[in-house]
Length: 298
Ligand SMILES: NC(=O)c1ccc[n+]([C@@H]2O[C@H](COP(=O)([O-])OP(=O)(O)OC[C@H]3O[C@@H](n4cnc5c(N)ncnc54)[C@H](OP(=O)(O)O)[C@@H]3O)[C@@H](O)[C@H]2O)c1
Image 1 (spheres, rainbow, N blue to C red):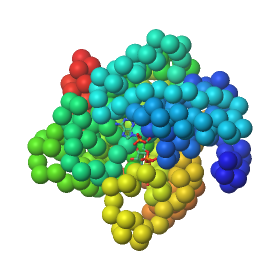
Image 2: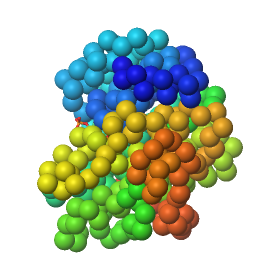
Image 3: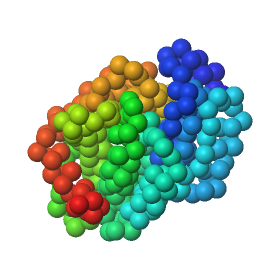
C-alpha cells in the first residue's frame, strides 16, 4: 500500500471495525482507494460495479494488502434502473444493516448516449441511479444506528444548472454542460437528503464530497493533449475527502468535503465551499419529485 496513504489513514481516521459499507464504482479510481482504506480500517466493504472481472481484480488487489476488514463483490449497473433494483433487493434480503453507502460511480463527458430508460447517460448514472439506490436502501440505513450516505459531487457543480426540460437529450447534446448538470444534481440531492432525514427524525447523515482534480479513468473521454496540460493529484489522495466524509464523527448533514488547496483543486481534505447553485431548495424539491416519478418510487 502506498506509504503516504497508509500513514494518512492511520493518523487521521478511526477504526471502522464491523461496519457494512457499499461503494458504487469501487473497482477503480477514487472508489477503489476508498474501499481499500475502509477495509484497512476494519469495515466489510461491498465493491459494487458493473463489470464482474474488473471487480474481481480489485478484490484481489485489496485482499493482498494487510486489511482487517473484508471485501466482496456486488453487481450493479447504474445505467439500468432494473439492475439497481436487483442489487438493492439482493442486499436488503441478505444483510441486516448498512452503516455507510457511498454514491461514487460516475462517468464524465462520454459521447452522446442514454441509459436503459432513455435518460442522458451522465444524469442517469451519476444522479438518477444513485437516487433510486439510496431510496431503496433507506429503510436499511434507517434501522442502522449512526448510518450515513456519502455522495460524490465535483467542482463542476459551480455555476451549473439543472435543465428539467433536457434530461433525455431533448436539446443538442453538450457533453460538458451535461456533466456539470449531473454533478450539481448529486450535490443538490445530498443536501436535500440531509434535510429530509432531519425533518423525519431519521438517524442518517447525508454528507457530500469532491476529489478536486484527481488522475483516474474518469478522464478516459478527454483529449490526451488537453490532459497533458492539466495537473492532477494521485488517485489515493483524491480518495481522502470521501474517506473523511464517510468516517468523521463530527460530520453533519450538509457538510461538503474537498481538498484544501486554492480553488479546492488539490490538497488534503477540509470543508469545501458549496456554490449557491446547489442551495436552491425549490430546485431540490423539484429534483426529488422528478427522481421519484422517473424511478417509479411512488
Ligand atoms: N477524478 C476526478 O478528478 C473527479 C473530479 C470530480 C468528481 N469526481 C467524481 O468521483 C467519482 C469517482 O470517479 P473516478 O474519478 O474515480 O473515476 P473512475 O476511475 O472512472 O471510476 C468510476 C467508477 O464508476 C464506475 N461506473 C461507471 N459507469 C457505471 C455504471 N453504469 N454502473 C456502475 N458503475 C459504473 C466505473 O466502472 P468501470 O470500471 O466498469 O467503468 C468505475 O468503477 C465520480 O462520481 C466522479 O464524478 C472525480
